[in-house]
Image (tube, rainbow, N blue to C red; front, side, top):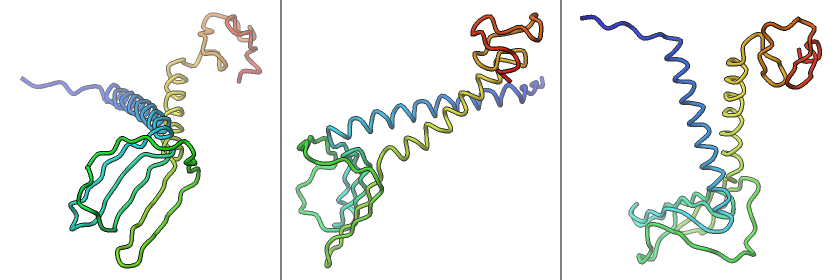
Length: 166
């Protein structure tokens, strides 16, 4: 018994739908992390790299990547801490290096940057899917199906004329 090949167009639509949903969830997750990181510090720390520190934390509205330096030996691998509200939020990427014998490097990436990189293509993909689903006879302003109406008739849903909507 031979299997019939699936419709390539349907496979492409499923793949694009999965990408739109994944982009939506990534955007929502980054937005939640950004808001939570303003009030608390969430992160992971690894001290097993030959006595060197490796840390990834979301704090002050940014992603804080730390590597190098030495550790004391009594630290916990996971962090969930609150900090004083006088700590300012970081709005622009920043790299810092401190120490001479055991240098500690820190890279601060504001979470609005990856959030923006997730939201823009996701919004474009959802808009493109909405426009493609609306069809060629749809109103360009609201998506109402204008099939069966005279070409010069304004949209009954939003009132936009066919000439100004194009």
